[in-house]
Image (cartoon, rainbow, N blue to C red; front, side):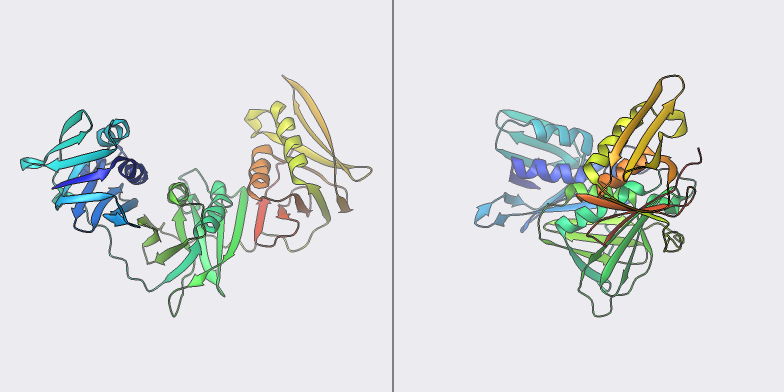
Length: 380
């Protein structure tokens, strides 16, 4: 194998596939990056068996030559060393050549590295995915949907199914839900079906996979094709294939968690509310999960407070845009509230309370596709 490639293209491609490579693997070959050179271009692959990322660099693109293929072939190179080397090469072009017994030479400018490669035949093949259940979402919308839900997945492995985001499609709408049993984030988005009969219910995609995917996606209106099978999901963006396994098990029915009625409704400026919660949390006791208290007072105002006996107390008064219904006294995790407010991208937020120990719901004032639910903490 021998080819010459634009260094910047190589660096970008290596950084993308490195997101799937881990040193914590029982399969030694997966600590490497597989490089395939063929007449159409170069394909780089990284995998940790849960996530696999394939990045294709075409030989020519819009009359610009990215790669000059001199001899087709394959090699697996140790990811940790290879990624560091390509980032620091001095020239604008990189020549990679493989000799007998997988010995590999990397040359750029005045630098030359010789690495011991691994047998590409030992590298696992990526799964074959049939395109029966296929739909498309704009890349920027998909990144937003991930950002607005994935933060609420569980970080505990006691219930592995809750470490993922539940996706299901109904009437041409993708519904995404994440919960760690103390809070819930829900987001829906219109999709473009690419299969005649698009049917799937309750696939659960690991939160880790979605976090890595969002780092790779461009913030553009280009469509990302998504293919769902029984055990895998494939995201196809421009020159990138991103595979992830699906989580096994039944996701809990979260539809019954969201209250349909409310005793108190308020509308408040998101930024002002977020800043008040942030300040109040400075003195919240870490041992009690960063809890702050909220109480309605006269003149449509809120009192936000926190009390730490060893440190002190803080009181914040915040005006609401509107406040209707019964008085409210409730305590909650400041972190959960701040995460929810940051995810909603709105100027004003509506909050519906149904009691001091019942979950409360946050939605943007003029947006029905996003819901955040938080369970209160017993302090009053």
